[in-house]
Image (cartoon, rainbow, N blue to C red; front, side, top):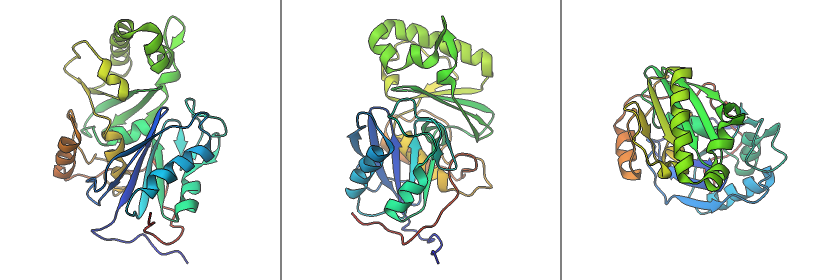
Length: 286
């Protein structure tokens, strides 16, 4: 029989953020505070499931030990199974990433869309809140009173027959230049505001550093560290829909940690990750 998940103040979570250009990981304690250095490796070319799992294993080996794993993944994920991964390699459709990692590390794993994970570390949990990530592609998730509703806005029509991702993704930024990219982003914010009538919009992802215009009062940039800090939220009690971190701009890891640990509310993980699948002994050691 498989032992149930241990309840301990020393419970540690390996938080992983899979991106189109890089894969990052950090070890979190039970309160969501990093207790290891944040590490990054390049996302492999033609990033197949096998290559990505291998990259995660490389990052995990550098950590002192963990009891469970949270993964933010750039695509559609349901119950730990990947359905799309447009900015990675082939072989992802129907791939059970949670099960593959559980088998490799012999500990519980929860996987969610990367925008969902980042949003869980940023939203206030009140009203309609939209999270857009600007990186290799364009990720998105809508929160209704803290409950995440994953979207795929990046692949919807936006401008002159092209999608949001085709106009605002990494390739578009390089091809069009920062000035044109910013103009299109401004238009996108206006379009999204009319479409969703959101209370707040959060912009995440590595390309937010290129934003050069003043954002509306209800729009703010969140730091990439949210893509890791939000991983702890996948393990909160399911009955509470409120996020662990109340919405505000997170300027750096130190501020993010202070804000994370000061919040008393917890997060619903329904519809964003996998059910806990205890599959063996805990505490993988490097």
